[in-house]
Length: 176
Ligand code: FES
Image 1 (cartoon, protein in one colour):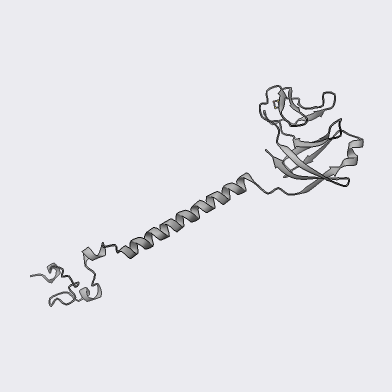
Image 2 (tube, helix red, strand yellow):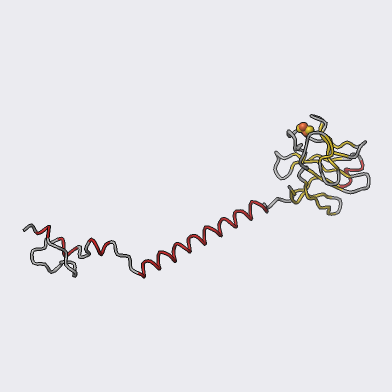
């Protein structure tokens, strides 16, 4: 009888007389190899739960950062500039984001993205009608909230938060 075909014994066949030499180095039988102990199962479930919890936390933190991005603080001009002009152009939060700050006839300071929400032309301040106006398709926006009030735009302009410190004006965030 071939020693390779010896039936496996309960003790791993390490003691079988005719067992090949490698049997003593690999005492685990095929059936035992597939056996998952209760301890291994608990370890697997615990690690799996920890991994899932960690992944959920990463997702929550990433989503918080996406919805509450940190904006830089940037000086955009001075209040005294409005003695000579009704609006100031600036870039915020990056140099590629044109914005406009306006002092309304009532003296209120407001600022918006200058990019029209229709097809991205630059809006300008229409002093006669006290509104933001887009010359591309005659779109217009309310000066106090940036809401569309005429033409094709349907979404309001992103508002730029500004703070006055003495004579200086700072942009501090974007309200989309
Ligand atoms: S791009 Fe401003 S109204 Fe069309």
